[in-house]
Amino acid sequence: MDDPAAAVDIDHYAAHVDMLHQVQEQITRLSKLRGDLQADIKRALGDAEVGLIAGLPAVTNRTTLRTSLSAKAVKRLWPWVARACSETRPVTTFLLVS
Image: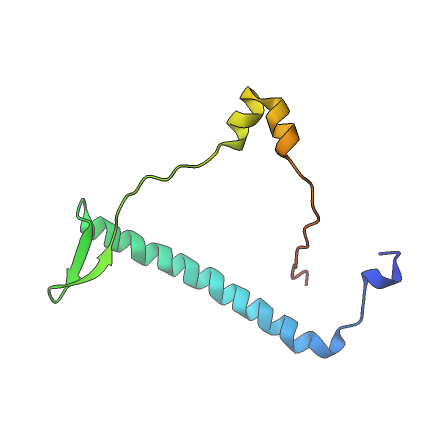
């Protein structure tokens, strides 16, 4: 961080940073809970696609096909195409460090 623009004082945002930490903890906890609840329901569904509550559809669990391009396969089979179609661009990543 030799560049003076690389760091700036954000003391007045300390509460924001603290709240972001709390939100991240809640997201992590709730994501795990969501996964556990979905797994329980999927087990209950078995092979069924629709789960009913009081006779009405409450959840669906359907399998569909999705077509995607395998970058690994393109690089292996046609490396010159992969090089011709690749691009480098800047990416900014926000990270809570404390």
